[in-house]
Image 1 (tube, one colour):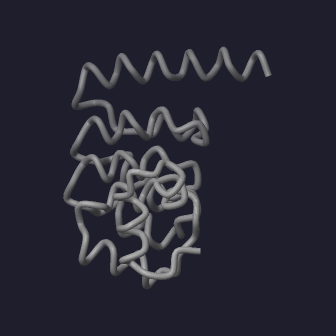
Image 2 (cartoon, rainbow, N blue to C red; image 1 turned 45 degrees about the vertical axis):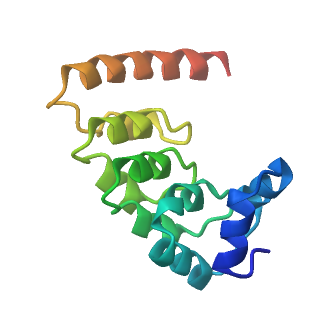
Length: 139
């Protein structure tokens, strides 16, 4: 378990790949994540990458000003309906694209992602739905 913000920073910035990996898979208390977000905003994307991250932290990060942080949240398999609804209308089309390719999102939900402001996203939505149908037919 990651016990402090300082420990997470040390693990994440280590040159040792095993320590970096530990930063991605070890749990931490919500208070620790909040301290990292507050005192080390440059590491927010790595907080979002953590496999054990609590949904409450993902909800905070889904509102982040940095679209790369929001993209990372959009790719998380355990996002809530609230996070999906928010990111499906995100102002950044790359966030919506990342959400579109989240493997846990159903075809019905994918169809709810806002694409009417982007020809590129409309095309990617059609590709994604075709890909998802082919995958589901095989399995």
